[in-house]
Length: 405
Image (cartoon, rainbow, N blue to C red):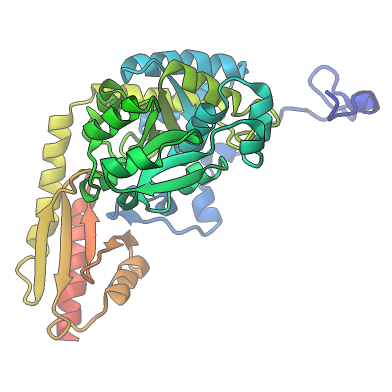
């Protein structure tokens, strides 16, 4: 209440649902429910044949999620109670001791590490990220060299120093009185020399928490609980990708003491590293609704739909002279049927960027994602029913038009 001067505003308070001028206080804008703000503001929409990329607004929420958000937006609740109830249910669903909804996977990593560093000590909570060692807070986290991909910045934000390691012997040498945790990036596991089980064994040997980032690593649905069952101290997951919850939501799940401490480092608590990582009640309930739907849906049926969609696109372009296509499934992150497309520039004289720009400028606009081979990849798990035919037709047309132009 110190942040507001109440007495000065008493004369402006509404009486009986009206302002003192007699104008209605709660009058809704006429026809507001029918407005298409995207069209009104001239915002480009597109068919997402690229995947769940944040810059492309990731995924579209299921109707059940939108309904949960819309309903909860009409009621007041105590924010911590919503987090309590939702976290309890989600923890049961993912085989964790505790869970919380965060402002995305990046936020989950920061808050989870903050919880490890501070515990429930309110004075320590006030110190991070600037005064770790002077406050008696451990300040180093071990990370395999192959697991550096940029998202470790979420850990850096707590003030810790990341210590690169490659082998078990490196871990043994690197651990000291400053070591706070050992972090693992799941999607880069094949590039590292230490796999999950050995990483956990090393963490246990040195009495350290082992943490893991699985941001985009669902499907399969079993990954929701796999790493909790394995014994990782916390698991960070994006909620706005394949699960199709609110894009700005994520999950932190794991040991109860870490989640409890992470929540103390988070909004609505003040003087915390997470005060700006606010998650509203609508996002919490929307995330719960999305997770509940995702776990209980028919994943085998969904996979068959994806295979049929990718086949339609593949068949439309695979026989065009100069084009090389491959259907594959990424082993970990974005684990869905994907079509890789590359071409001979002598036969199809167009650069990747120019081709993708043509797709972008066309009607309807389509987004794919560039690949390291100089072509592009396209996925289908974010397509609405029937859009695979549109994508197939447009790709074929653009390639054939380029060959004959």
